[in-house]
Length: 242
Ligand SMILES: Nc1ncnc2c1ncn2[C@@H]1O[C@H](COP(=O)(O)OP(=O)(O)OP(=O)(O)O)[C@@H](O)[C@H]1O
Image 1 (cartoon, rainbow, N blue to C red):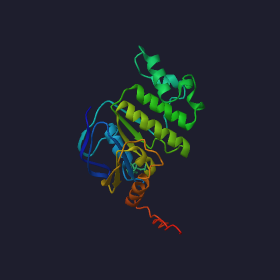
Image 2 (tube, rainbow, N blue to C red):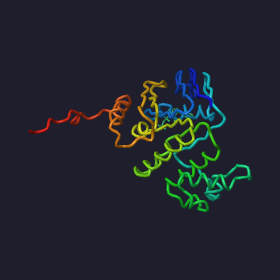
Image 3 (tube, helix red, strand yellow):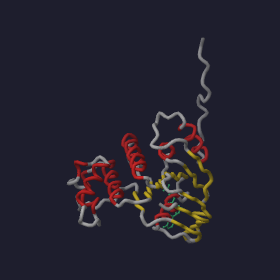
Image 4 (tube, rainbow, N blue to C red):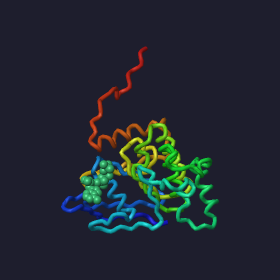
């Protein structure tokens, strides 16, 4: 499986520079999260990796075998769930592949449902099943769980983390949510001013438990890099009373 390699990738829209000579190597199998303030160019970078956008200059090495999932599941409402997942697949084995994929994302009972009857979380599960059947090497996620409630979001993070481990994909995920980034990624990069301003390696492998005590300081470090003022709080533990 090839790595993804970006060398001095720059992108402008008209006169407005968005990315300024971004260098990034993503080894095969790595889960990388991209965070940054709104408008910092996260989606643009992901779209360049996906081949949906052309860099103004620089060199990109990527793969054709990639799947993309967005914040909205982008299902075709006139097709049933199974037809959305199987769309474009060769007829041979299609039914079995779709059934397996729906089972893997926890939607075994929804093959005949219409997209408009699904919850937001279920629609995102279909979106992941659609990626799954294409057997990608690379999965690109653009704020995939941004519109979900907190509990559904945790379930979906566990699902993505489990799928990543099972299938050995390379995953690149754009997110606003630093807690999500540190729960899932091997490495979190911060985009600022069109460049990678910080890279934070997260020890261990995702999906990590919210109970993992190592995560909070990493989240705080990322928030600081994003320029979010943090309250002083009771950072130091209080001495126990005798
Ligand atoms: N097709 C386009 N034409 C013109 N400008 C664009 C286009 N796409 C993005 N931009 C501009 O590029 C900048 C970066 O946008 P991008 O969507 O990559 O940022 P982002 O970090 O993903 O933002 P957000 O977190 O708000 O989604 C923004 O100023 C945006 O307005």
